[in-house]
Length: 229
Image 1 (cartoon, rainbow, N blue to C red):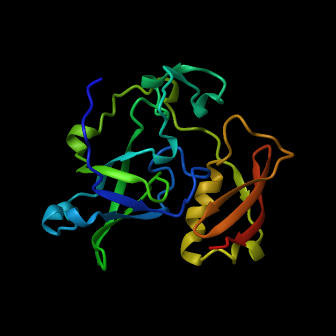
Image 2 (image 1 turned 180 degrees about the horizontal axis):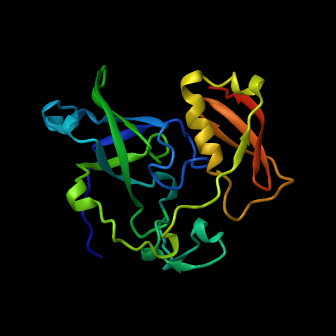
Image 3 (image 1 turned 45 degrees about the vertical axis):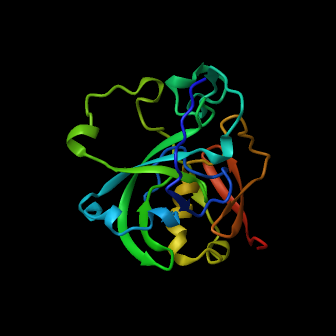
């Protein structure tokens, strides 16, 4: 089998240490902030010259939490309830022959840090630490196709959950992270094949453990606890 080497140029720093809770597509929760931190070889301001002129970027990255030796020609998209199998190349499933992801994010700022220049982006759907292979500017005249047909995912999911978040629990979340967390919860972070009203779910977000339950269209936050470092 022909193989090629691809370089990791950067890693993402996000609020999600595990896959659970991450929005299923980029851009669904604009309030989410993340940083693209470059590897030493690529910490060059020259490599970013002119990037501020673009509002959005494409990130090409690895589903590092889904790398497998074997692959399957069919997968079960969450959009179809996790019960219908489709061809892997007709989906955006992370379980692919090459675990490569493609995300469109908004460029918020270019910051100078102790680790060199970093990109502050919003709307990312990457797990913390995910390797990034490349960054390309989003070009509206070429990348935006209003006439495109989206197959089984032609329309955005119509249902967003109502989130009941007790004030005492919400106050445990840093103020600058609250809207992002509310957005994540409203998009129903449960696995498509695990949606029981009698079950308590939980995921890690920005150093916190968030536990919740869902009854019909209402998600209720039950606990917010600081995770042990």
